[in-house]
Length: 317
Image (cartoon, rainbow, N blue to C red; front, side):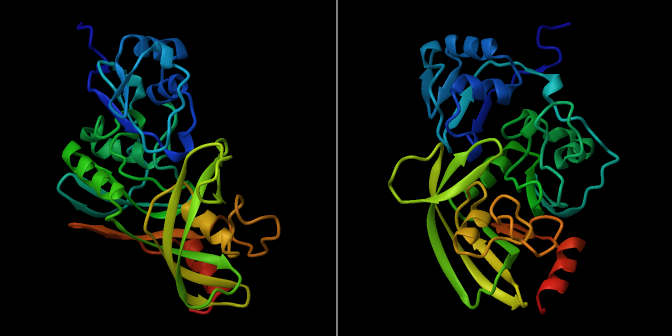
């Protein structure tokens, strides 16, 4: 048996998520690669780790990473156990497909990918059972093929790549803000007309994640920060709720939820940004990713049953 048996020698490269910003590099490596802190430090000592093309050594083990930084690890053998467990019995609705990519429908309550090797029930578990070739694509491991993500309780379109070239192209489109993303949101209160807003968001808590609108250019936030912009349009109203179409221009952790709450119209059913006085009576945050379009990619997701029922009850269509 060769030394590489049961392992993937592909060089690892990943982008630091907003929720990971502020983490020590040795802690982040251990979490992302599924290894111990000592093994992560050994990688640093060997010169195998670069952050934004800067090579780090053991003396940099306490360096805190920023959101959007690219981390590269060369020569790391990923254990086969870090692969998502195939689950062919999980339902999977493919909305659209093209050369090297798939758009799938994410139900509310289902994670996009597992956080631990023995975790199941995610979209990726369902996908690798049908497309085992996507393992190792993109960031690899338990995020193989993932182009972008939605919060667990947000429903709608999610893109995956099954070829590396497609992943690089689509990730580049997201970084360049070329992707047209349309969401529907049921929000509290009456919001008429349409508008655009740009705020600076910062990660103020990591576990569980929370972001907040902060004063531009001022410090004090616990983690990453970014100018985040979106457009909204009111579609229908009820006595205490509004149905919005929302188009985020940028992408940041909890961007839509935090921005709408800042405007005084939190998403109905949002336990993080909605506060304790939410009387909408919905089972989860009413946010749905309706459409994703970029280049030849066009995928649309119908409203799930719980969203349609909440809309029918709360607003006039």
